[in-house]
Image (cartoon, rainbow, N blue to C red; front, side, top):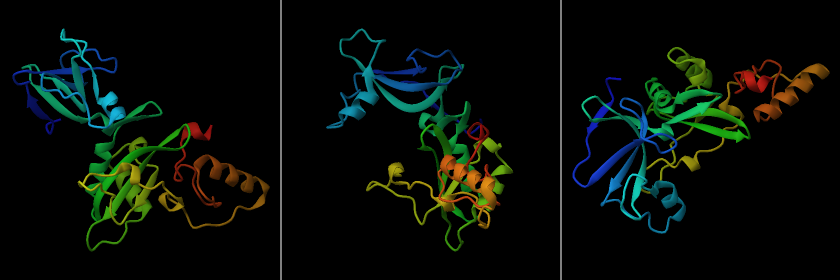
Length: 241
């Protein structure tokens, strides 16, 4: 898109690789993950062995013994002139039920809504085997909490339904680390109030009671009323099967 930023070419003593999931170079114009190699690459993170193993990997393209390259987590592609175009973070892309989803695009749409100050979208798997999009948002100064139904409908005007989060969690403030970065692990698991819940009316009859129990178990919600909607509670077609 026109907003993507060219970040140029590697400077002296630096090598940049754009690699696929098998750590093989991608062709010109194809998106890959950016790796940095060269004499300036450190040996790892201090006292962070697991993170070091994830980010600092052997450089198969170097003839220097023990050479390493740093996995940045950034996405990019080569332009025709040899410059690299930055395309965002790979942790901002997820795949749910075979569909690739840009979390950043959903977050941008959320923050464009009047009354929303900040937003972050995650793919959570609170129910094993069922990954769902969860949106966390805060209110702008002077604005009341936007109802889930209003936020959901506003997103559906601009995004395909598979990119609209199943659950919405309103927070007074996003959890931040001491250095001001978002603490994703501190974001709470969504509760019943995170789904679009209609006015509760107890199920009537054996069939409705059984269905409500099944839905509650499948969707990991506390209770299901007779007017609730399976998909509004976070369900989808595969889960329905």
